[in-house]
Length: 301
Image 1 (tube, rainbow, N blue to C red):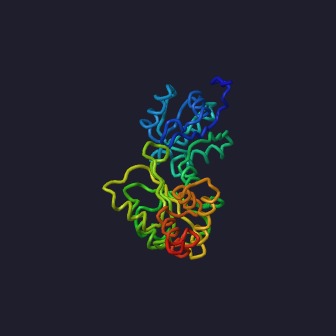
Image 2: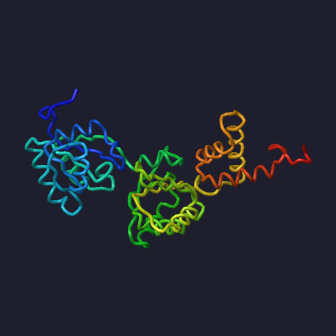
Image 3: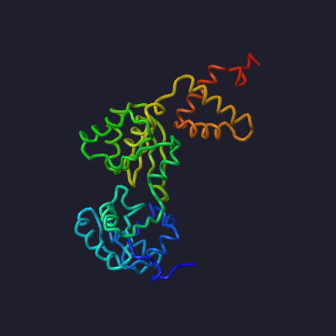
């Protein structure tokens, strides 16, 4: 049963908003946005489109990187007066590579209620669909815009033992991949997620060199981008034993009768965290190396 406005406790409500598709938002988030006294948002014009779509009349106030110092004091004062403030960013969870951290810390320091309303996150959405290991990962946010500073950060991460996740702007993605290739090597496996939950959502999987070449060939690159990078231990071209393992897995998938060759190839590539083209090459090599296992030549039959 929905609460009425008077039953919502005073405090700061950190509300996740859609990263693309408007249906990303939760029912709880919609209720909170309706019942708070004020919504502090990164861009009032952007947030207003969301509010208009769901017919939410709550007033908004800007809260972004250029005014957060002054606005934080204002918002904290309102919460201390018993008001309910929702904090949103343009997309996803506030405070994750977006404004919000300052006011959250200030509210906690003053002993005020801070309530997180979970929801969509590009970081998690891209990671779980990447096919790369998720047991441990490191989120590095946006890399520095300048190449020298960017390379210094990448050098410090080159031997990280965790899967790495970055955000990047479309106009810098090729430059980032160029530096990534120089520091991590051309063969390191990566996944690029673009336009998550939107109509043109896209996942690109392969080596750094392959995906850099793919994006360089495009006349324009648009949309929010998340880059997931495999570890040094698991993220380079597989040795012969690993190629044999992939081929063995393909046979298992086909022999059980569940998948045809094309589907088995796609499934094995996903499980091994390699591109379909790389998996196809390994599969063809294995058939050449073991012709009898795959039916042999006409003479052998």
